Length: 126
Image 1 (cartoon, rainbow, N blue to C red):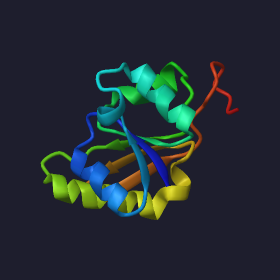
Image 2 (image 1 turned 90 degrees about the horizontal axis):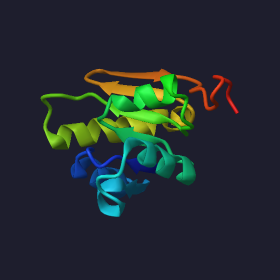
Image 3 (image 1 turned 120 degrees about the vertical axis):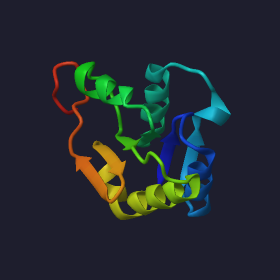
């Protein structure tokens, strides 16, 4: 699966996704310190869901209605980087086809997928 990882995502998650055969563009390697809007544009241009630790992306896609191919919010506080990597890869492998066009939250013991992110200024899907 093609994915974009925000620069705040642990490199162990990126490495584990790549080891499992996923194509990952990692903002920390490509263009660190760019704005959240620019990160979302990278993901949109790549037609790839964005994996992030940053809750601000919910604001961007739901309130500001910025276009997004999907957002995966990782909320795994207190876990080791290795365990986080395992859980993120498992979620991507299990829910991969559902991630596009959805806002997904990965938390301990749960993966929630909210379908159909609005992708235009008036809230309609395009």
